Image (cartoon, rainbow, N blue to C red; front, side):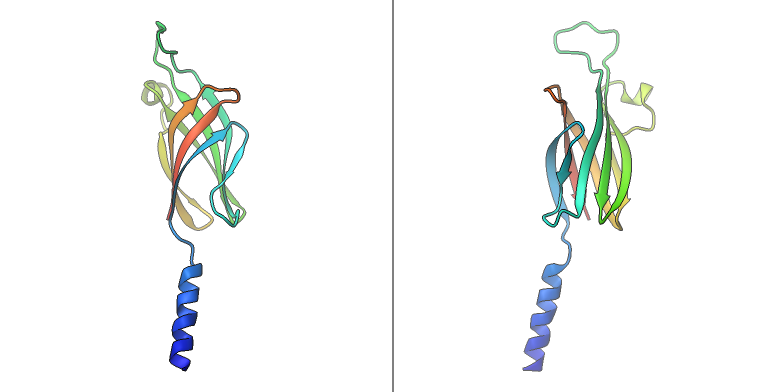
Length: 130
């Protein structure tokens, strides 16, 4: 009987352990998305700067979208700047489209997938938490 109680306790403990999280979120500029059900992991899009050349326009350069994010888990915030677009490598050196951060003791991979030019502007972000 003690063995069965031990197995039950072990199963309960393992089910409570944080799982890896994968998701794609569309977040308004200045807004925060809750990543985990308990609300302990969030991603805030603090700013979006969109200078992409519009479709059907003649531009001198292709442009880029810069997005500043704040990843928070268990009260520990970490900031990152992400960039997509043809001019990211030449004009925004050091600002990748995808980055891996350690947030609250866990590894977060954050990728800027797209930016939507709605009002307010939105960032489409993929997140994987290990």
